[in-house]
Image 1 (cartoon, rainbow, N blue to C red):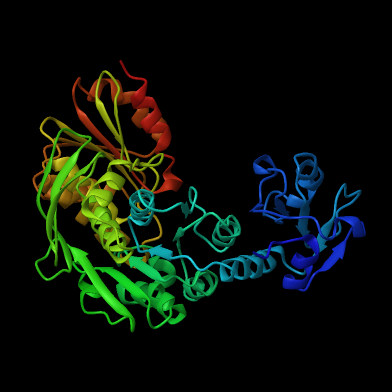
Image 2: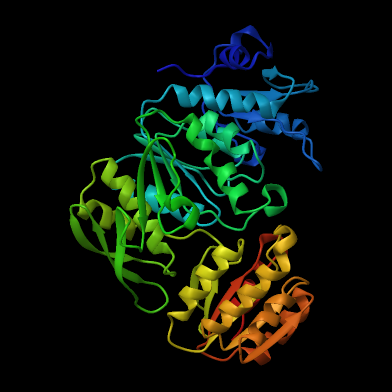
Length: 454
């Protein structure tokens, strides 16, 4: 199989190789943007950020074993070879697309307004029962993270699961041009990035750019319970999943065992089988359904799919359940929009006990922000939240909706520190406590403070 060298990197990117001729043919494997992540043989991509110029860390990358750097201006006293390009971001995208073209393995793209990471991790866990799988690490789902992920594909990989996140029109097209998915999952069309995308129709239009970059024999696996996806024609084979009877794959008899297990039956054209999801959240049933659809397409058995789901673990800040010894903490602080908060509240409602929701601002919702926050308050009341605690300017509207819908007790704070100071007086032993807000609200510090309560 063809592999990258500094010389090949210059050829693919149209850049200029600078360094000793003896290093032009050195093997380069993988690419990183943080010198602390460098492994021997990596390409270090120098990014000129708003606060930090990655070129200043090039020699540290060489010291850690980088075989080459990608730079957009000269590296003073460079201790190794580098390729000089006009834009390192544009160059790494060319490299990612080229590297992906060398692989004839199933590439699964995952997008949607919410649940992308859960679906990606669930699909990778299921496929891992049969294949050697490469997947997006962390939140590397943007125009820099996706090519870095693609560059980490290895000859021994038998499938790849790539998460694709966007915030503007045209971005999905640029991602899909690199990823060229054979199978694409769309988890839902929800209220996210509305400042840029306008409304739900705009979100659908932006997400669906992916289908223009898929082969006719490819497949789209869509959430058939979503109003906009149910009737959408992706111009490739369409498979639907969800709870409705009309879906190709659906779940029945959904129930919970405590805060850390969800049980259901998966029903498809070939019959049904019981499934156990070892994690919090009824919404994970949808992730398991998408993984089942992918597994089926790639020839996996019921037992293999069940075994893979049992290997699923949530990542930090996404519905992590911890028994602190005082309360059961549901840390879902990584991010939030109306769809994901509703799902979190519905999962909270399934738990038996005193349920507390600590909710914050959902950012970037545009002109409908106030109304969407109020609707979440109504949902909290209808979900049986015993005590609603809100923080942030927009979150005041969540409290308004909760009170208007007959919610019992609520408090609103403008700062995390004020909220944290009063938690010992509000929380009671054996409470179930959900913590959720947009990442910019820094609710992880609230979750951390709850974990330390005794």
